[in-house]
Length: 120
Image 1: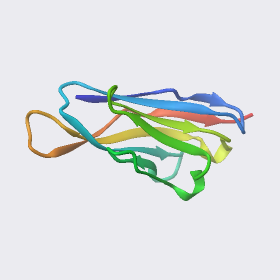
Image 2: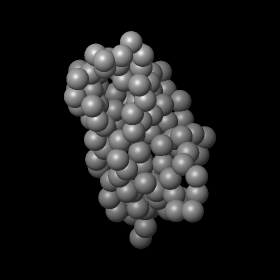
Image 3: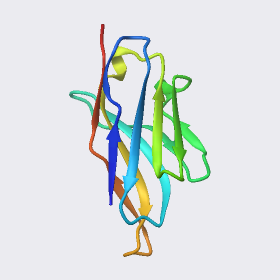
Image 4: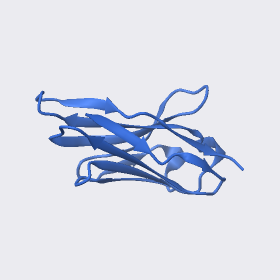
């Protein structure tokens, strides 16, 4: 089981990017999915969450600019980022609670990071 993040890159201030995170492997179900980010010299912070039934929550500084969504049929979560600012520059990580056949519990998994650089 793994989470594969993609979509990072270099974008100018005010621009947009969409990150994707696909879960693969032997998965029975997926619970809460999350995006975190870590800027150079700073602690990792929770950016957005989405529950299985689509309820969302956001870091205050990204409210109104970022949208998290999920496609349960594709086991994929997205982070649409608009009006990007230099302060959004960070490595973005996806994270999720997955149910696999070998346990009755949800297990937390991390994807590899994808770098987002906002610069002119």
